[in-house]
Image 1 (tube, rainbow, N blue to C red):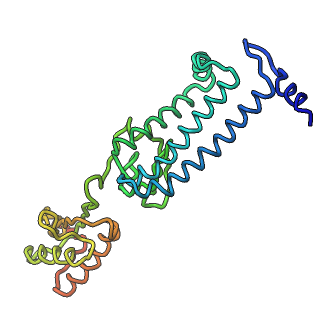
Image 2: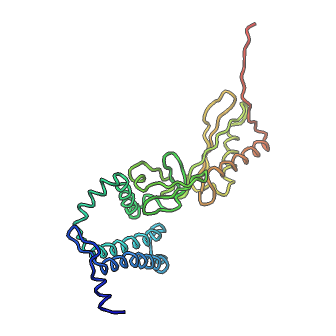
Image 3: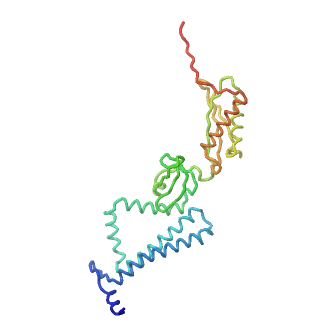
Length: 281
């Protein structure tokens, strides 16, 4: 192969306009920077995830997000280098910014907003992996926190992809931000004539027997004699559940089974709805 011919081919201008003379050599070099830079960025991010991230004294979500930011940061640098090789001045982005805003409208704006929100979430940590959050009235567990969106698994088994900007612009309830306990509630009615103190004791004992119910002072099960109902005495049983061991719904179901068995054992009656009708003579 003739080196001079190769050199002349690479120096040949393939496009000219807007004050730029794009040669074949510059085009190939820019393409190599974009493709090779993307591959190199991915390799560096993967190496960081395998070798460095596990040793970091940081949260799990930080260790998972850091390689992604490294990849995008390095790839953007390679992209800027490719533009420099092509002779494209960075001031062109002043024009492109307006063109993108005009062409893509709110789509590009929302994408940038979600990416920036992802970085803020990484630093501020309003929630973390495994937290139970409530989004738009739906409660679920945070499975992953990405650059653009957060994945939440609801109790119905539905995966929600929530844009990161929603977590910063809307009110989000984090039920387990400080600890992994949630409060459960069981309501029950006992027949009139029943010993109310015995009902209290039975309800607390049924909840305390469950392994997921917390027994520490301040969070031990407690009862409330709520009201005198039409058919019986109304009680509420409150208890705190360690959600790392069981869900609140499953624990409440188990506690109801235990209450029913205890009521039968102690001959405590649960009344049927009653309606007394007085007929005129």
